[in-house]
Length: 331
Image (cartoon, rainbow, N blue to C red):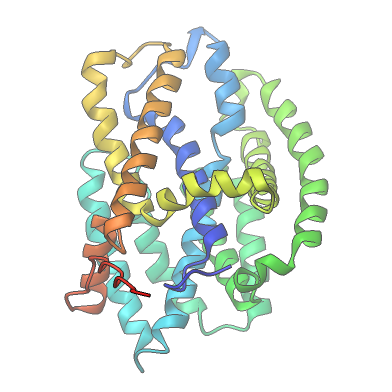
């Protein structure tokens, strides 16, 4: 379902959900927390969090980024006869932003997203949709089986996002409940089994095992389809009210989370520690702050602050951002 600005509600909510999961992993990466208690023995809570979070939310975020670039190109084509030039400017601006962000978070994704968008996604927009789908599946599965997970999965996931747009999946989500149910029913047991495989893989073997990337992708598929089904319920409608504003301000929240983590670290002393309970409290606090701030900001403005700057650079014009008060109607 789309709102009056053409955004798709469910995708914004899923994007907000993915941000919450990525945050947990980013905290231990940014603060360089210890993951082993003794040689070959992982900290128990870190081990559990790795299986629940690591490699599960980043694929969702990457897939949605690829899909959003494709949706943007489609809409840009309605406004200009040179939509690819506009997308190139958008990707270059994202790359510059990522380069700045990289100075504070070396594992950040924005710069790789921009590069993959320019090198892989943009040329692929001229291919038949079946070729895009096959290439996306081959790249994603091939990387998981050979190179592992992480940023190497981005090209394939971007292509899958582009394929989802070309097959019209994003615009017909509300008509695909039974398909989502079928995928979820197949993905859930596979995700549980592979998560157990990952959990029981010895620590020394995790870096060379295919268990983490395979379990991560199946977990991501389960989370994605499961959440989309939940959003169709009354409980999901309430959840969407929290997640959707966060997803609409994904870029602002992704960058501001780095700032909040770095500001909190000197007080929490997470570096080199195994205080994963404190990590969860910090993650919950940041999520609460961003959920409230996103909701309040979007009551006044159409775009998040970073999103607005990005949009202005993309279109090379000053885009109106302030929401005008609705006119008072008299009876």
